[in-house]
Length: 210
Image 1 (cartoon, rainbow, N blue to C red):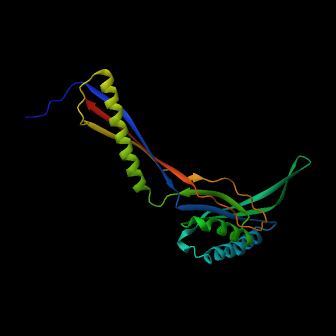
Image 2: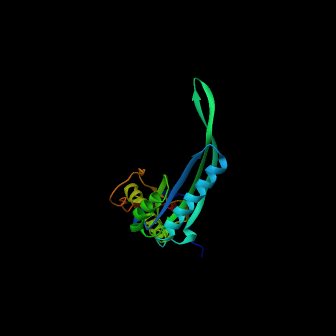
Image 3: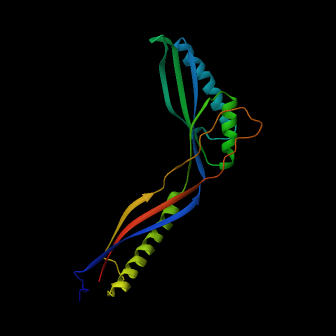
């Protein structure tokens, strides 16, 4: 005998959130050089960037965690008495560094800066194992949907079938968390980096019969 299916349905949206401590950081830093001759600017940039990379490797950051993110060569112009005057070339070499020990972030920044990096373009916290936390958020979202449906049914005095007839997973929110801008300045102490928290969210649409 087939189960009875009512023509009346109730659809609710359930939300779930889990707060997790970040366990990885993606750091982007750049070496910027300016010279009248483009070849000199490129050679100087390559020398400094190699020194920066070697200094980061000396902190036991795996080489596979260091990648080129961008490389640009741009002419520089000054405006003198309303006229555009060529004044050289700017070379920008940006690398991304993945750091899996949060306690190392400040040391990596300080070491890179001491060896010639002159721009920290971004710093983002992330989670290495996001699926574990997302499954928890998804479970909370389903519980939230069931609670909403039961509240509506009780309030409206409806006979709700506790087994849903449809569940749609709507979203998966695991965004990286940007950190504040970092000023490159000489200092006697290590750059302080506070561990970030990340909110992992899940949303479901659940339909019940009543």
